[in-house]
Length: 285
Image (cartoon, rainbow, N blue to C red; front, side, top):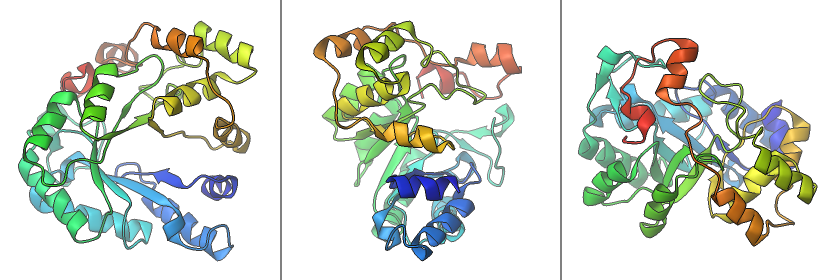
């Protein structure tokens, strides 16, 4: 129902992943949206999915994409991403990943397979997620098809300025997940929506804090992923295009002290040991 409501309101980009378990319901919703006339064809949508770590092995990339397409009941994706810059033991689909299941990724083999997927027409474009400048540089050094997108945690409290500059210089579009802080997830927090400066700007503008965050990212040339099952909030999240932030507003937001929403230590204190390398949290991935 939420997907159909989103399409009805005007949303056209849907982001999923093999790990999320949402590919099949998304595929069913797309078929229903066509059947009831909300869209004329699948081509009106932009669908992204992701390669999980246990499939991040050269010989497993194509079969993984084919499974995703089968789940989605689609002939192609618009964008296929490497979910994390690490591999894990094949056949295990879980998060967190156990420390003993981590493996070093063969970036050349995996990226070549990603390129093959695009050449076969199974995805229109390929990219990465949670990649640092260093890891992007490693891929760019040998890529015949460079990553089109890097999807990362990004919001006013974690602005990724160095990464934004690197991606802009190399023609890579940054996509922001957790643009509102991912409150309600095991790793997110309410610090973005509770930020006093953002509240102050929102009050002056007669907007919500969420709208301020989304408009800020939009004005930075960043693609935004929002997640909501509430129709009113879905509608509100779209109402960011007929107004703008002042230069003073943008400067205030850009000067906000920066910190990740949930560091490895935060996670451990809340949920116990996080079974992955600290590199996944400290930005060195």
